[in-house]
Length: 335
Image 1 (tube, rainbow, N blue to C red):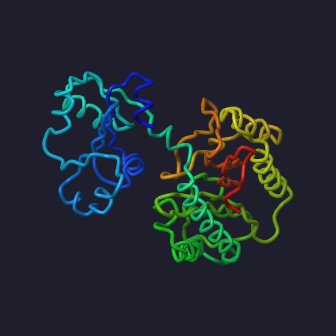
Image 2: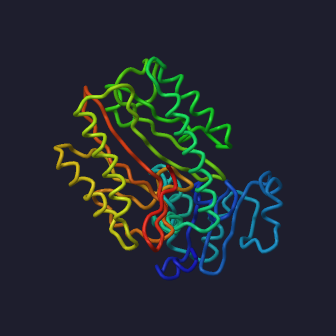
Image 3: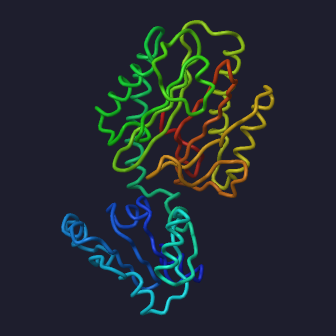
């Protein structure tokens, strides 16, 4: 599939080195992959060639695996007189170093990321398993989050449930988000030693299974809440469901974002982040559901929808589900 894209785009070679992209294309998390129209070579260290021998020597493995040596990629590029090499996204320092190494024109292209946006049946099975773990974690949160419990203690118990079910890492690798009271107005607030009191608590969590992530958020009411809190809570939760139910194949991601934005303006609230993001080998990947996105939503894409309201000094509300777009619309994978 990538070779076909290179041919269509008129690109002779692509060097893939991003960890998730290498994993997606090779089945392993190591090496540098050089793809041309007619060839695909995976360069790995001798140690990893031995460690992954069951994968690399498997029947039908589509790549030629070479032990990486000094200047191997450069020698291949020069031998075949390749003047332009496409690469996946990388830092400026890495880009500059590669340009000097290959002495070729370097083109940054998102071909692999765009391919990853549409999930295979195998990938969907892993994502659904991950979403099941996240949903179980949220069920635990509904039980654990209560008045008088310290935020960090609640997180420890919730994450313990997710990990015990088989998640490869804590949510999002560095842990879930949980914030109560005024702290809930901070979009990326981490749990602290604060005791949960009456009011709203934003709980944002996920899992990782077979390399694939899930992501979901709920805002829980602890004790009695004010009329203004209740009004915003209900509006945001209903908005999340309305947007999910409205999405069909061919929808513009930018239009979906603006739908959320317009609805929040109706209650005089500004929207501070994207309406959603793709989920897969990374928590945030393509498609991008933001105001300037040109992405078109297709069947078998997995992404989140996450409207939110944040009022500094008062409270925050966010609801989020990971969904699968099918030919008939969106199907919720978290609950």
